[in-house]
Image 1 (cartoon, rainbow, N blue to C red):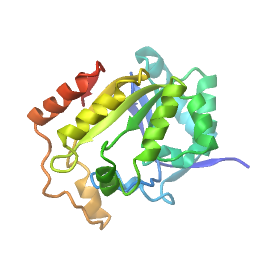
Image 2 (cartoon, one colour):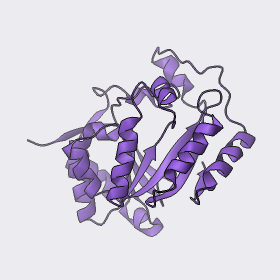
Image 3 (cartoon, helix red, strand yellow):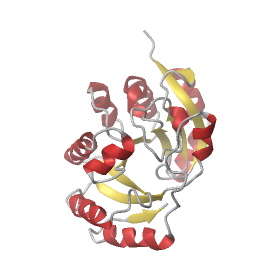
Image 4 (cartoon, rainbow, N blue to C red):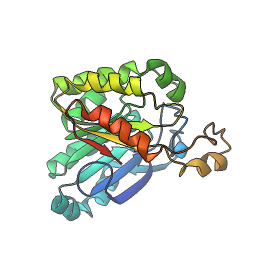
Length: 245
């Protein structure tokens, strides 16, 4: 039986989801319920547009020359792309056959045999560690931090290049001591080649209104440049490449 994927949207010239120019596939469905999510319209796994593997590959191939020229590739994001790991596995197999680099942007919450297979064909993982404080993480996402850290350990064991992504939300996810603890934790992860700092923004707020969903961060300001620089300096102490995006 042919595997069908549900896709929220496609972006043909992504520049912030991995190296080079990326063809970005926003998969439909997510198990996390992040208070700061700017894509809550990706949560419902029953929505989105159905694609076969071949239909998606037809779209990807159109931009192969741009990927090759820039050192880019395909990035699967969401939502949580690994909710559809069976479909992604078939696509990434085809990508690798055609010499297309694969990046995976994930919360790290889902683990099964399909996920393990997908990682065999993945060149770089963009791992979202929303907070290193387990209580804060559970509060802002609705799920446990433990699976994410377990995946990070696995990525180290398999020596899969990883970019760690951290979001800074004032008065919620900006505790400097917690960030210092995360920096210390990442010291031993030689596979982590970059840490990306993402500042909370309001660009997705309108989507919550349109969906009739309660948005809890209306009064939360965007982080100051000073705060972002403080966090960056803490994370740089482990020798990692830290970038403010």
